[in-house]
Length: 107
Image: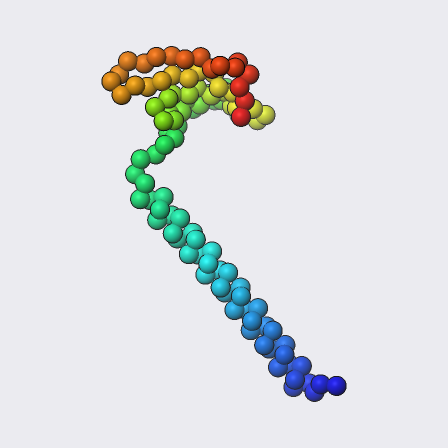
């Protein structure tokens, strides 16, 4: 049978390895958070812009969104997100309106 000193030594080694692994995990998570924030800050141009939100009730709203030269009018409820209108925004200024292909488009 092992002596008490050997048992405490094994317990101490196991505890120190556990602390080391947790510290390594926390360091890795911190580095991931830091570098992902730096890469997001470098991208100056947003791909999705929320232009306006109109609330009909606490859980129902209309959202006007710009996505890659298209303006989307979305109807948002707790169960669905429905595309109500799609408008192409050309760079010269004239707008062409396109209706969604399927009236029951949901996300």
